[in-house]
Image (cartoon, rainbow, N blue to C red):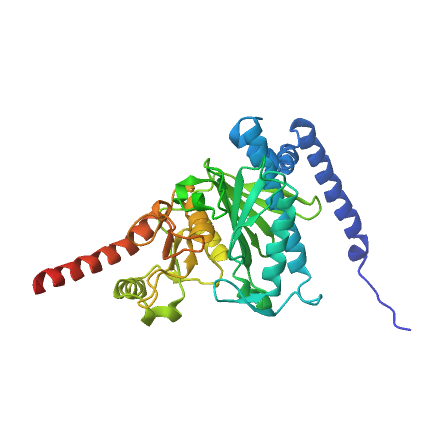
Length: 386
């Protein structure tokens, strides 16, 4: 048998005793601190967990008036739609008829994905039960959807993109939902919703839900921009960032450079500029919500210009560009077509499109400077030939 002859001094060392002693001293120290200082962090966490979305809306409005309660209730229904969509997305690879396409083409001329259909129906279902929203206008529907039982009292319209960036779903990348709330003007007796064809400053609220590593809802009712994160254990959106401000300048430029040779020369000149100057980095994820969310917190600029063949651009004005522009301006940023502010553009139809430049005010101004310079040069050429 092998015998170990350990030195006497080694036998006398008692590591468990040392650990116990240190632990005991730490416990005494912690207890002393707890006795002299209340658990401030715990109190703050509790206050944060109690700030739900509906409570925050009422707090922002500083009122319990009928209008304030209506807006709080509508935001609550939008949050419920976001929860339903987030739950469905989380099981996307495990359920049938979640991934893939339906085989249909929507009013935009785009292939309809199964999740597009589910997300659109989720918004309709939750808002039919609200009693407050009379009309819904969506990317997935050619005409506004009316809820007759709500119309006698519901004077609100929700415009929304139920699932922005849905081409990312099959790759398990970020997607989102974008929404805008407007108040109905007139009785809309002909059912054409002409009162929606107004500029973006008529929005009373706007926001988006981002489905990523966590589910976040970001919104504004004209009193700053605020972010909420879905706590799955509570089933509630909890305030996680308040009064968000976009930095005046950021390193990020977000654009699909695959369209480079289809753009006007002014946008190509801007891309050449950022390629030649240090301090810029490209980030593009293929979903407006995800790309703008990064810029909202880190600064920079998102661009989706028109092309030579389609100068009107691809993004829809009423339920994509205008809500994002509303958030950008509320956070101290800017949103532009390259010529005029997005919020000043008046739609000529529900599914009108627009170019979009949005983000940090200095970065948007830089892009606009290239557009203006190009316009000036073209004007000079016209004058020279006249």
